[in-house]
Image (tube, rainbow, N blue to C red; front, top):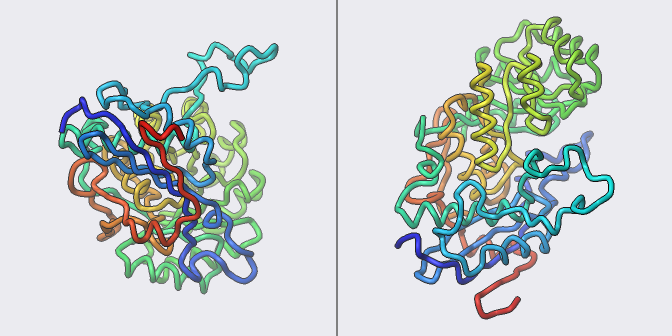
Length: 385
């Protein structure tokens, strides 16, 4: 195999894979939403038989996947820059030629990001690039700082009894820390107390309200109520505001985590957070992780509760970032009914080893894929699809 391999066939399969029974849906909190939203699994094959696998974030549209797939079809692997295999198509940017475009509207000054469909295709192409040189994906990203990545277990909104039950499941699986969703109305003190009783006083707990602690004064009150517990962290407790986030840090000892949906350089340069949760794609994550490190801030890799392919992708670029030493979010493969891969991403003492083998180190389980398939689309060099 070499970099002259040319992409000749792409299969995209839409799936819906629910969370395991009892993990998310509970009386009093309503049904979950994230696991009812479809994803696409990508299988991209070259003319010499090399296969790359990709997975989109949830909610990607078929047209989005098709646009990205057509952009890479027929091209040789040596044509792709590893950091952005699917380029922005400027004629499809809505602001192009508009009388009042976004500011700044010089596009080299704007971060447009990757669409969900483009990300799934890009992961598969990066998998192919690494495989074509018989290297792991982490080597494409500069090489590993570590061979295993610390990873949290995960629970949605919860109560003391439920968090005890679910953390015991996590401990049995091999996790030793937890990320939990919450709101100001929940029994946060009771949840923290129950969690510490089952996981240990020193066990890490990330409380992620998705801004549902609402205001700085409410978040400070909740933080003070649990300050006696060790190693509890708040992620995005209320909407980002520079003075209020700085006020929170002055008024409580609970560490504050910024999610990268807010421009990370704003939070870092204003001293608004202790840690950062940074998102894909890999090139953006690695750039933001380097920037966080320059400010002396540690980070982890966030996710959207993924399947096995994207979780493997997270593990590879997490291992390639010097300051990505905090437990990350590559837990989705154990939360959902099936991870749709043949390999096992098995945590041990709170860490998941990097998958073995070239590229991602994982492959799609075709039988499982067929079972969960909702829709399928194919594109070949001669298909004209």
